[in-house]
Length: 230
Ligand code: ADP
Ligand code: MG
Image 1 (cartoon, rainbow, N blue to C red):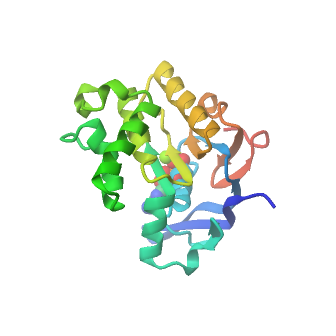
Image 2: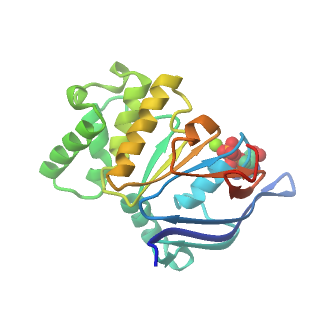
Image 3: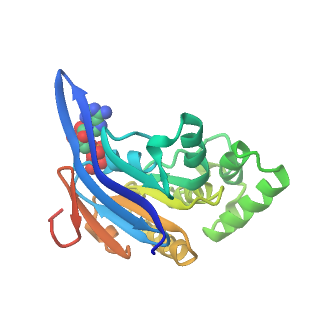
């Protein structure tokens, strides 16, 4: 049997707003195998970030089943969810969320620190990851000394710090020019070739076309790449 990392069935997410119930995700079925590079593409407002927050255990569905790495997340307590979120998922966002007073290397070390990694290992691992994302020569630079593309590289290295099963990216190239965005996607392809499972969310069909599999999300419904027009 294939090694299924994400298994979602009939995921619905509703929000209450002004006395109204808004159904934003309308019954999402999604399976992601370990080792995949999946893009989920859809226009602004289609529910991409809402879905990403549920995949990343930052939010809980109103109804439906989500089994991550063989565990039904309904059965997990807050501590176990936090543990999974920290250890098994690396997040990359459109904004890089680097801490301005820390160097690139120190930013990459933050999740390792919270995972109680010995400092010697933090130093080694952060250098190794920054080298992997092409930042070997700029490890001691501060965020404001780095271009957007380089800051996103640091954010990606930080996301990989605890050796997550899944790299989850929401509009990772959204703030970058086309050429720089392409380099970030190229880095994702390289990381995927090295074994990292990637789910990337984007409104940009061109960016999505670099993934190995594409799903489209439209008005809270998900479909194969060729069944809906984003
Ligand atoms: P995307 O990331 O595809 O642009 P989102 O998932 O952010 O879309 O949002 C989808 C829709 O859900 C939007 O119409 C948005 O206004 C609505 N939405 C998202 N979060 C909430 C919330 N907490 N309360 C009410 N509406 C929300
Ligand atoms: Mg979004």
